[in-house]
Image (cartoon, rainbow, N blue to C red; front, side, top):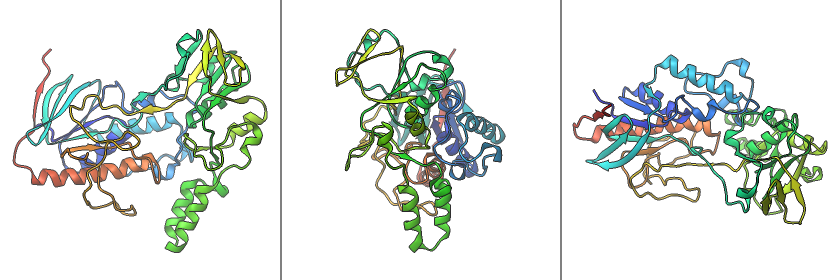
Length: 396
């Protein structure tokens, strides 16, 4: 029998959806254009660690091995995902390109490299890191050195002896700048626009998630206070090291970064904060104050953006460019505030997972989203007429 649900994307969000679909006994198929599961995590640089702790970052029903420590590395996380998929024998098909998803007969018509099919439900689980984002940058095309996105950064060893600028002070930009201090010609230039908020990885001696666990066990009158104290912890007087911080009343465009490594590197003169260049020429970056920096490589740690170019529909997006969800009441996950589920507004049977990063972090939310989406799909299938899904394979 053909599958009832298509999940597009075999990253952690898609894997979580597959696990909950398996538990519910719903026939499903997961497809991904890459040749490995969780391809974003498969090729990350070796120093990358999860920003969220082990307490809330594991897949359903399986905690991380103790050897992973509090903040697992990207490589540990990917190995863990591969074992999880293998052990549960999830129905995942790799090297599959989805060309078109369109509404048809109260369901969804899908064209892919596997063929054409009709499904009662489709889950978009490609996440918000599908494509590297490069903002407009005057003169960057005239730079004769190497330009690469952080997506393509594999380790500091590739830049030994070079003069390097990292543009972007989010978690990846900070992590890469600090790692480069081991191999490149110092200083590493960290180009900042809005400044950065640096937070301790272990506020008051414990990881943030440990404080959240403790807060949940306390009476309600203490929960908010304790959570607020852990959330607001940050390093003070960071600007004294030369690192740009947000002006009073200004919010940083970068996510809060954890750990003291950048402060130490800046104090030692290994990392130097500079403004984002206003122009490039040959191997030179021109700054707004008129100064020039000679460079060999520019690394763009400028983030990613989601892309659903295969969707043959119009859909509303929020201020972050993410699909607006259907405003309808639905059973909620224990401990979560009431919300509306994950069906895309105006498009019954189309769901989105892996793009909501608030609360306890992305990995925890993947599990929450997967469980709620499957509950919504169960409700939808129970109300649909008895039409079997169909699949026509691509002819060789």
